[in-house]
Amino acid sequence: MRTSYRETPVPGIMGRSDHDQPSVFLPENMLREARRQRNLVPGDVPDVCLLDPDGDIVRYLTAANRAVRSPSWACYHTELWETGYDDLRIGIVGCAVGAPFAVLVAEELFASGCQFLVSIASAGKLDADRSLPEVILIDRALRGDGTSHAYVPSSAAIKADPCLIEAVSRGLE
Image 1 (cartoon, rainbow, N blue to C red):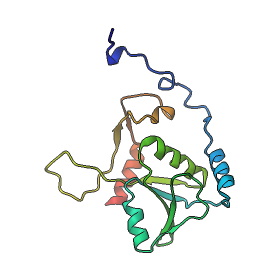
Image 2 (image 1 turned 45 degrees about the vertical axis):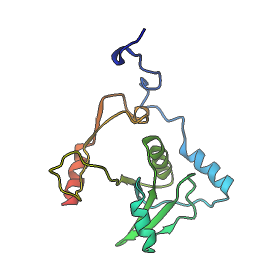
Image 3 (image 1 turned 120 degrees about the vertical axis):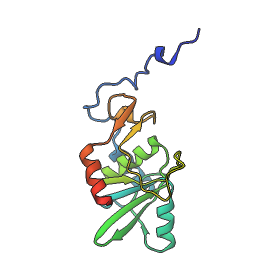
Image 4 (image 1 turned 90 degrees about the horizontal axis):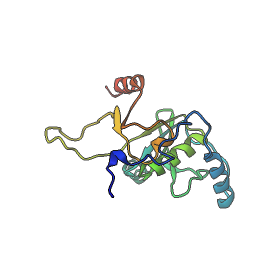
């Protein structure tokens, strides 16, 4: 007997309601063990960091000798590159693709001292009338990434904070 999507029960993890409780996953523990296993010294990351899922920013900056690899970054499978803009120190992690992995990297960045994290990526276009290149500020997204249900209650979509969107919009002008 087949059931429709709407009749399918929500798996336990997807229907959780304890979003205000502390996480059982502690990125600090993963970082501590990675540092121990890899013999790395502790160190902070820049206050401002970027996720570069495509890796284009990292490749550009490293080819131009404008970024250095952080010797203390302990997250497995990634490298943290540091660059600067005016007096601002910026950390960049390239190729953190997929929501679950990007969230792991984000959690570890915040546990390491990051205060502000932005993801900058490319995407295809569906509207033939749009000219490229173009900067698009995303203010909402369909959910189904396999990760966001662990942070906020389930819903079909999630919206960005309107105040944040307004501030970023002003900065992009």
